[in-house]
Length: 316
Image 1 (spheres, one colour):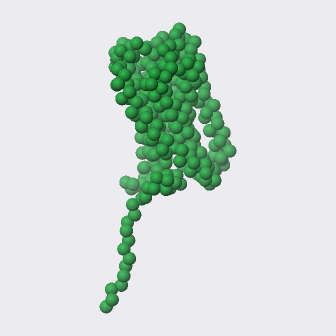
Image 2: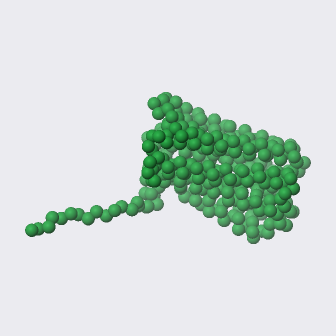
Image 3: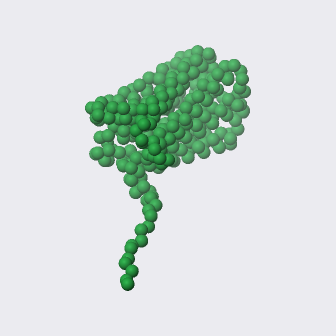
């Protein structure tokens, strides 16, 4: 913690709070309206894709809110007990893992709808979708729970020794800590990268299966726009996890200075990890017509329309 304060002045750390706060405002402007639009419409909430989307947006909203509030507390020198810090880190991990698993569930749903259109309704009923969502949150609790227990038992000092609960500080401490803790950290992040890799593989398989169907023809084809959204979000989700692995490997081989590593960690947590979650509601929300209409109506956004002048007959 002394090195953290020595190498990173307070005003520079506060400058990095701009992105989390902006993302916090962005998600709260849109996600509650999308959730309201989904659950208030009886027809929409009976569709699997919208339930999975609502689950993804809810996990993103929880993650961005918890992370932004935590960073603001740290910037304001609000002290936090060990139990409160453990709870905050646990729910951060749960919401992040839930987002990854929800994305995987959405990919599987799209794959079934495209590859097995005749059996899709029987394979993905609403009751089964709700069970999948429940299992998503249950499995999301496993890794954070094991991580918190592992951190508490392996380290001689508490991760919140200075009563400051910070995810960047935790990552930096983990990278510089004992080798077993570092290996557990690498294995956990690698597992998330494998999940994202499977998601990318499913999208590539869908493209190969449907490229002869004609849905990709035209520059403004709807399929191209949808897959572009998926690829953008996948790329932005890959970057922070891959950066954590690279940072850990560089630290292990003494190829990175402490100051550089702290800046990388802060930039990764405050920008790269929250930016995809802030873009998700806008990319998906304005893509689906059933959701975009209530959003545009609430914010009084109007699509440009071409004016049509009336045709009058010329008297002769």
